[in-house]
Length: 562
Figure 1 (spheres, rainbow, N blue to C red):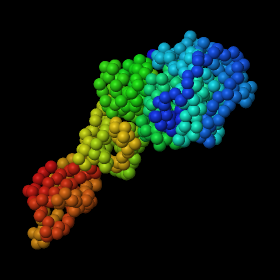
Figure 2: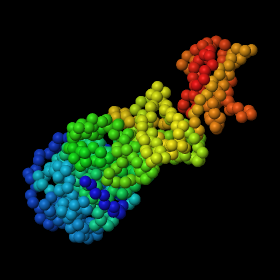
Figure 3: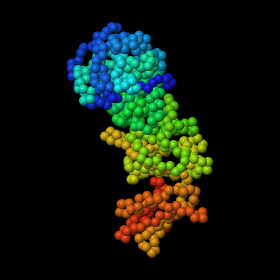
Figure 4: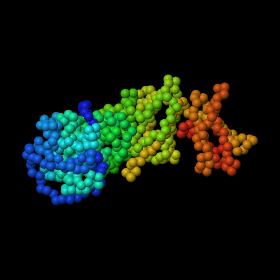
């Protein structure tokens, strides 16, 4: 069981994603370029060494001088000489050694090393000394407002010197190193220890899957810190503020949404933990040599779960957005966290109608939520629609909150022929008090993983009702026509449109119908002219409210009641 410790702390950024994203797979898996050294000898306190480090501002490697300040069963702690007694003291080193070797907030009898190696397995040991080097240094970064808290450098798991297309020549330190920023404030805080647990997971994960996709590696790294009892509030808070980002695509990340990516990836791993086998499942994922979505699905298959990644993602997005409803009703079993209670607000909330949302952009494996609330006590009925240019891999979940407190979740059928979906809820305002529409694009193919869609949505108050439709040719002018739709009940003015299609081309595209009211009687009408060469027997017409078809047919059909 995981225990959440609510602690305060600043947000931390990991440098590993930037290093891995810049690093081509052939470099990560490159064969050794220099002969292996013999096992490293035991070191004594005071031993001095030069390390190669990354300058993130200049995107190049540089050297630092560091001294060994502590030695434990599983770690050496080196401190950059210029940081000693400035930002790092003997107390700092002792606190870090205790956290890594002896005690954590999650378990006062086990340190980070024991907790993570017992579940994830031992780290690599390129220098064959059975120890991890914790190197405390002033990590050079772009500015003080953008600070890298730590990183793991895969180059160190190779030997000799390699060439990187962005960073240039890179020298390997040929050791198992976690680079930790020494200017964390305060240096003795649990934040710094959380960074060490986070980076230690990267080292272990690299041993099993060196080309793992960033979102999984970072999600597992945050999960590892959480497993050790450290606070991830800032990452979670960032995702709560920006829940519409892609889970799987970090390629467009910026400093404004970077922390939200961490929060999303962590929450997804926590969801897998809560619903698909706990720590054992996350450990199996880390140890699985397959990368990305395939690694997740194969891991779950070996543990008896055959669900697709897209299906799990769809449940996860519902879980996130229904966090605001958990105090209002009873959620179904798949839609909740057991170990945390985040609050993730819908992207759009409406309680006045009609509603029109246009040109909303949705990235692959990102999710939006559109919430509709009852506007007035006497409101009865709601009709909404969704449309996009995409005709496949779009998933739409709909959640209903009933007066009884029951929450029902279902999948909204999506018309792949024209990229639309619609729903009429006559009980909205009576039995149903809230509705949430949750669309997402879910393309699992890695080659198309950076796709996105643009969508429109609208909502109209009142019941969809029934209509009597009349097609009237002009008896004097045969090329003039009129179509009339008479609602069975006139509870409100709806926006109806008429579309005419001839030989697969639209000759009238969503033309608004005129609303006419006379002595309590209402109708919608639209008059139009057709060219004489058009064969009216093959002209198709459709009347829509939003994207919902009210009635449809061909011009020379008899009068119908819908």
